[in-house]
Length: 329
Image (cartoon, rainbow, N blue to C red; front, side, top):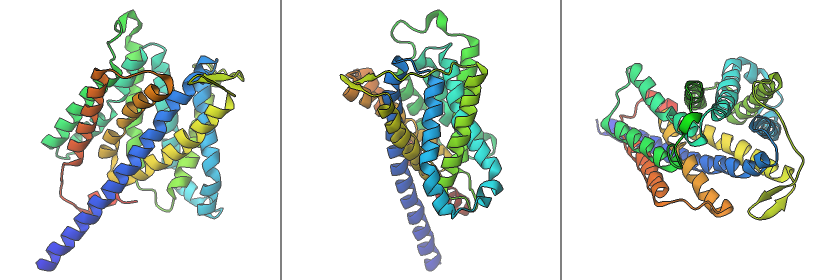
């Protein structure tokens, strides 16, 4: 019995250590993701459509990771083919679906409202787990409530005069669909992929997502326009390609890779809550780079999001073979 107890404690220690590493990876991923909105904003102001910016961003990110992906695969593409459904799901749902549906929603909704609806994804994952028979503990419920309240306070969906008449049912449905795709992103990121290195999944998924996003733009459902005009950022004038290149490397290649690594260690539920920190990091970067100083309400919202993550992280469910499998790469 003593040896069994020691073995159990060792397993739990490894599990918790893996979670700590996963949480660190997720936080750095969200910091990287948050640079995208800051750096892409000047491009949008210069005439780029969101669809074009996203398509080029994820295409470049996928190409950047293609070289290390081919190296770890040793030129053998069979793991991609054997995990073809996961690659397509990652590219179409996690990358293209989330982006396209979100930008379709913001054509009909205020950005803050669309963000709020989209970031309900962690709650959807908790509900899905409950429907599958997983117990929902009080700490998780409290964490979900705190996180949702935090997102509301940060994005302030009804502030500044409120959404007014620009909000409609179609926009709400599109944003809700984006939330479903975002939940799918975390579920797919945490899913096992036998024989397929994470960098290969991210690279191939980004390229699939880029093709799908560009395809939607070419159909005319969303505008697909670009510009080579110089852009302004933080008072400096920059060539158009510079912020796009940084977004491709930091906000796409690095961000998606770290997010996948974190999700594999945390599981989809905790990873989705950690993903909410993107709005906190984006607010801080907007303050530092664009001079958009957050108010006391936004700071309180950021604290609520962090408190929600801590509560979900503190839910000490028993360490089992299934939880270890979900949490370790």
